[in-house]
Image (tube, helix red, strand yellow):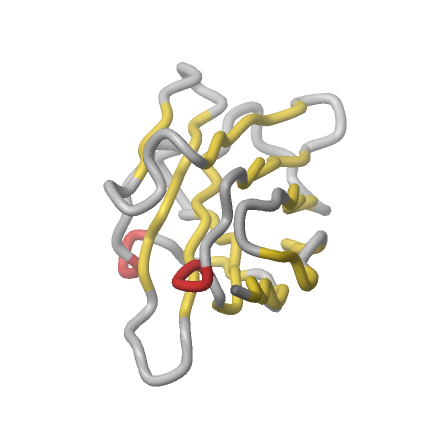
Length: 123
């Protein structure tokens, strides 16, 4: 089970940190991806991290502004979001594939999904 949290309302240029806590995870290695979906738009994969080799992926739209990290002891993945802009407004979801614990930025790769957390950036 995945639990996303940390969303909220922030002004443009501000920062937020999202968390994705994985419960019931018994695997030694895992991958967690972050997606977002704005009203009327398709779900967009924005970042992913694999605990197997520490590899990360970022979409061009967030590269240089967002940083993904993980805490293996807590089975939690974080998404640090800086210099947020109104176009970042969306519901943010975390997701995990069944196997292998490797990354991708397309939704079809992932099987388990968290419930989403709203991020709203005002101008």
